Figure 1 (cartoon, rainbow, N blue to C red):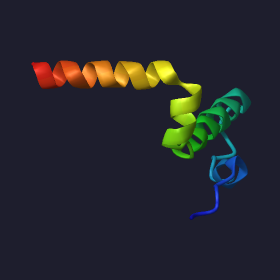
Figure 2: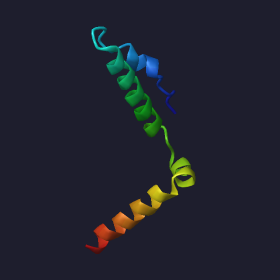
Figure 3: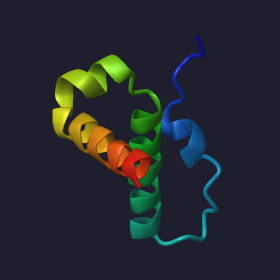
Figure 4: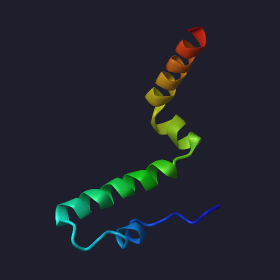
Length: 65
C-alpha cells in the first residue's frame, strides 16, 4: 500500500506570488482531497450511513428507469 501524501508536499508546488488566503484555501482543498481518497468502504459504511443509503436508492432508481 502506498504511503499517504502529506499536504506540505503539494504546498511546495504553489507559486510564491499567489495571495496568502488563496494558498490557505488551496491547502485546505488539497487536505480534503487527500482525506477523501484515503477513505475505505468500511469507514464510509460505519461513519456515513446516509451516504450508503442514498447511493443505494439512486442506483435502484437508475435500474428501475
